[in-house]
View 1 (tube, rainbow, N blue to C red):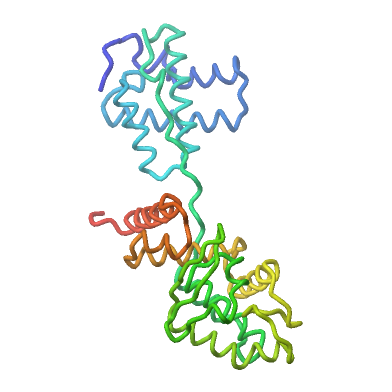
View 2: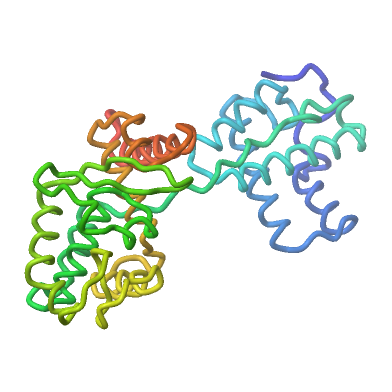
Length: 307
């Protein structure tokens, strides 16, 4: 782990070399205070890593620096934070070479981790239950809203597909429906018995009241008997989410993500989830494996097999 060059032992006239580098950044480079603080934390972590190997930071070689970066990633730091740490290390070793404390830098092409795409937000099963329980099912609107949310969570449909469902698309006794998705492609989507039961109740006790004797091809209608819009459903969902004290970022797509994540957690096949969601490419569906991995890492950190 130690480099053979002995031009630096971590101090210069009693001053840590890391502090000299930070002073250089402050005076010569005039970096902002918050940037200096961040670099200071990063290099302090590097010094602690080196101390664990009984050497100074300047004695770390390339493989040791790579091990340090892996350690930072393993601690759960964001890719952006680890990238900043790598930049601090590269700059520090450049300073050591320019100041003739090292002959060459082991960090010249040290790479920051590639940033992962943001993971989709999803609700826990308990949060979904709280959301579903919000509509007042003694009213026609409440019956409609309960059926809407039940169907969305049971199928993972896109909101545009959900509001376009027609009564003729339903096969409630067989627990599935047909759907026209992106690219005008038709697919069959299974649904649970609970969602089917709430749709039956809405069709019997809620929809006729909302229609007021009129007819409409779409299953879900607004209070005036017209087709329910995307914005209309978004507002409905946000209002129930607020009543259930759910995150403000709640949207129909969050329920779609929740559907896929919960299926995967319960052992569903990724290819089957792809078909239900209507993804053209399996790589699009694979984002949910990252969600599951992140949750497993979080659970492991909270309940490790050995303390």
